[in-house]
Image (tube, rainbow, N blue to C red; front, side, top):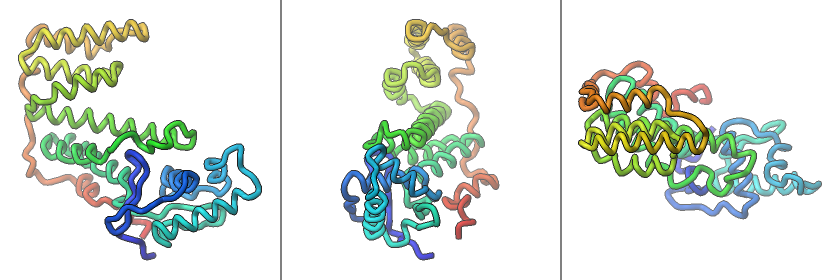
Length: 281
């Protein structure tokens, strides 16, 4: 089946689409919702009844299915005739991984994580930074709060935080010291996220700011007690003790593997952005 190679859809922010490098109008809110529901289940068949329920909810009526078909017809004209495939009981969005920014993010993040597992910190950082640069705001921004979007938004937000933590790990591993300001902002934004607190403590200590690193631990511990009645984890308490003792391992980044090292079979598979969808062809 021929598909439009110049189609691009972005959901890591407000929903938008482009063909041949030019933005296209996706139409009124209901039509945008139809597309967003299909994107949340990309390459899966979404039942007609579910589409109607997601778009019209309790306001669905006898004319809703007909309206849905009209919206789908307009979307096909806008995105390409092969972009939406009709099945017996529903519809599926038929796009490649490199045509959707969320898929591209997943692919680049997976490459970055794979590189870090091999101690290829510079290569991993490059992939993870490229993945994070795709974000323009909150995923499915205009549909925040919609029950049908909640699961995919939560998944993408969790993957974004994971990629950010790993990118910061790569920064620390290669001796990058300009991460303190970023980590300070992240700790304010995610006050209960212990991973950011721990990494800020390490970054401050490596910058010669032991007192600030210990103060960060106390601030995090106080906030935990006040907000949830919990105490820092044993791992964070151990990090505090290592900082107090001037553990030399905190000042020496882990040994870096040569970035020219031959990639593993897994990484070679990941290098193909459609490796796990070849069976579609």
